[in-house]
Image (cartoon, rainbow, N blue to C red):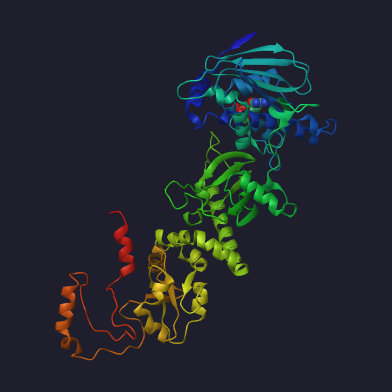
Length: 555
Ligand code: ADP
Ligand code: MG
């Protein structure tokens, strides 16, 4: 048996690795499975380039097994295995990646999913294990090797026997501590969940013995039996051809992923072949998530790199105003950071985010055009968010969002777009008029609206708190300014109050003001009123409705 120390730099690095690179200990399983998948990929690649090697798909799989009593967890593959030299190079030197080298040597660029590149993933095992044993036999050799290490101090290598080529990694799982329940990694249900979470779309079957509650043969009794099962889905839905997929497939995936319990209102399946290549499936929910309009809600898309989950909620991929969108994005082109939990450059993310935003917008505009009813349902749920979007970023997103907005129209008695409003604009009408209030009925009765209606002009009724703020920030739509019905200058020829009339009634106005005990700052004559004796108005930029909202806001 040979005993070797890790190289000095490796020791420090290993310590760093084990203790600080990863946010979640559980990703060690993702790393081991990824390595196993890479090892099978390498045989697959050899078989493609070398006719004398046959690749029978059924012979290639990854197997997970565990032994609670002995606290061992094993990840076994039927992949290419390692020679003694490779063991020393790849597992004895941290940050050396045999997989990256393989990609380089074979000039593999596209189409192969080889995941490894940094040469550190393997060591994440030490986050959960006191001891790691690797038994491996390289493809094309009878010799097998056992590599063993308890962490920083070094490792041993000795010859052993193994029936088939491939590699088995056996972890001696740590005892529970106060902070960490290592037993989780010896638990069938939890292990299955981890595979589903991170490695569901590894291309080879991941097999595990799982308990099944079954009826005994020739008896009415039930028993729990162990059955070997493939626990990953292998082919991600987003890599399948759109034409082959049914509505049900999309809905099932949405629910499986727990994006929501509802049936999604709409989905978008993208295969982008640009500077960054990626596939994505995006969903617009049909109901509002219970925490959507609260601080707890976290936006983001699930991000995959070659089928391996990297981030659960990548928020950079969605603008706030489309934060209701759920979905997955998978790319082979991402440059990941060493922990494979983040990306190195945000340029790739920015490119993807831009396209994704465009596509969502396009799809919403389409829905608005093709299926108004559906769009109104969408708008009822998430329209508020679009309006916030305009307001929050001081109108920067006006161009992107203005055509997605709907407001209730006084003349049409239904929700209309700004484009529809302006298409009906009368000759001589200078403004897009709006009036705010608690509900449409109340607004309809507002005295201020009369003179505008009398002119045959349409008014938008605003009932969401954010509405007026959004319009204020937008200022205009296609050059037509928004105008509150309670503005002083309505752009309408109005009868002027004759000179002297105001002073005639001065006394009674003073009396009224006094009776209202400071609730109004001024009482004056108006010619705007038709059927109503009196109305409330405000001077300046802030309307009465806005004032109400502002007063509710925390200081
Ligand atoms: P990476 O996967 O980024 O290369 P790892 O630390 O996960 O880094 O693995 C280091 C290297 O060890 C791999 O590149 C590969 O050459 C080798 N290796 C690890 N696991 C296996 C395995 N199951 N079968 C064959 N080779 C493996
Ligand atoms: Mg790896």
